[in-house]
Length: 267
Image (tube, rainbow, N blue to C red; front, side, top):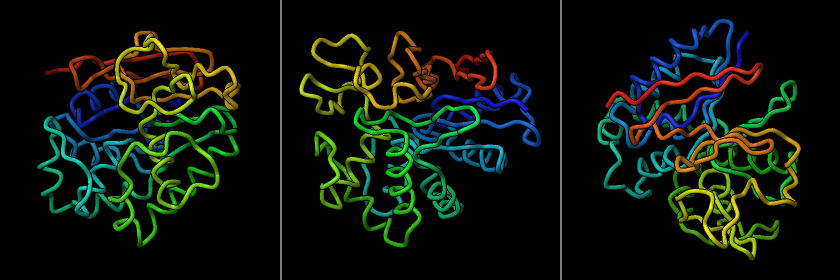
């Protein structure tokens, strides 16, 4: 059995299909972790969703900001980006089926045998592994509830700038979404800087995985979301986003032994 993790696919179906071929993936014996942003700016988001759904229980998926945005767009919220390519997916006769499948996916995943975690963007420096699992479950339960279509469109915004347990319901939900699917950096006051998207060397900013007091520092974690990182691996943190949708590569990391695979963008 091989266990692989794959970076942000963003609708790049041809590259995903080729990468699964390159790693000789067998859904009957192997497992693949997807770190979110399955859909978005690439040309074939619906094909990507259909392929990953066909992998059934051999695929472990955590949701990214583009995936949640699609869910919000389906219910009158969300924000259309000028370079997203979601028209086919939004007008698909299978749209509701795709929404229901996405809603059942995870926000955070931890494998106790591998002692390894998976998230799209990051985790708050204050959160232990137990906190991450508890808070992700809280958000997952909301997405699976009947009220998600009303609540999700209300959860857009960059506030609050820090986490604490006493936040109001909407602030709490927004904060969980922002940390798990958008976080890259903190400022010197340890407040979120959610709009920063360049490399890791910005003066005055600290990448989430470089906070010395981070409670999950001893748990290996793989993530995506930050394609402009020049260095991809730090102590117990490995970024899988190799910027495929922008002309880079779709990257895979084998988690149960040391191996990597990559496919260059075909466009």
